[in-house]
Picture (cartoon, rainbow, N blue to C red):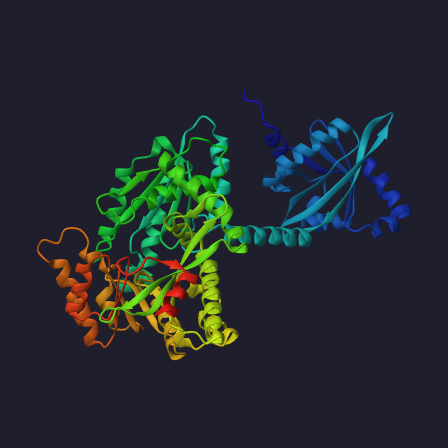
Length: 585
């Protein structure tokens, strides 16, 4: 025969409201201690426990009210099963308290739910003490306090806390983790299973913004939700995932589950089912965990590095993190460690590349560039720090540093009565989201007593492809304040001609990349010619940048290009040397 478990034994335990002599004895005592008993908040019972059952010798009226029992329900020594009086969910907790009481022999204290026949469950605080004789418990006296209201408040507070925690840790659209919670969960997962190899995979959809613009945000959100559902089904309980931002997802799961081609097929299945009229390319960056003691955010960065290594490469869909990426990351870490000191200690130097009139060959202005003169490494190549500054957002701090130094130079020229030519400064995409860019430039000019005609603003063409509303509004404000807006690297992006229809622009800077390398059939020359002609039709001056040869100059004169800059004329020079060149003319 199967032996009953502890909670099963409690379920079948009998509770009897006794009518024997002991009960009469306690009722007689009630007249003596009645006043004291009535002062106690809650009900009082006196009972004995023999042969696995409970016999109640005394109970106050409050006890019956707690259980919703009438006096007539217990007449004649009515017997109840404990499971009819106590919530089954709390029998295990009660069993544990009884076991502890049997060990201590002095009574117990416990909170549990009882069954009220009228109102349902009630929470009670049950505190008992043993009445001993010859050192052994003869019976027990207990107080039962109704704590339902307090418990409900406590439970509501816990539920609210859990809801708040869920909202804080999870993305509201997809239900996946946010970044910080993901890192914590991934760390716990990796260390909970030391014998399992893990992998991080970061996913990204190229030009996802097109989905929102062409199909609407509801469709874009639906795509993200379906992607999250696919991720959740794939991971089950084996891994964790997060939506980092927009269309970026990061997953951590056992390496044995990785089947990248199968994953791509499923994602393409979702895209195909949504019947888009345009192609959405999916990329993945993969990092196989080598050192599980490494911070999780480093592991995520390695997957991101693998992903960034193939962005724009249309023949590749995924990449694994390798040692070369590690070296690049270490270089970036060095840059990160040094950049704030560099800003504080004026290690960044303003260089200017002059702009020339193509016909006269005279300097008409310049473009401010930055060079980093490190106290130990010497000059740091811009390609080794500018991309990281752009990704980290530090580019905005450096931009403002350059703006300030250019404004100070122009002010000094004005005060000395020297020749003053306009200098263009670069405005990065992130600058449009920091504070109020328009107000910043207006205050900058006011503080240095400058006219806006002396400081021109260069914005890369790629910046025009995102968040047009914010960018266009700010540029229009700056135009009205008298600033000239230059589009840098015009012709290098996919949106060049469509952008010209509505973009706030005063000058085009044409990238001479079209003329580099082999151009046997003359297509590069034709492209440059028609770009210049189009700009003239729109009454927009053109500056050709990257001019390196006499052949380039002759072509620009032939097609009527206004201005040029490049190594044929002058390399970027320190601000002081640029000033000597300007004053020397």
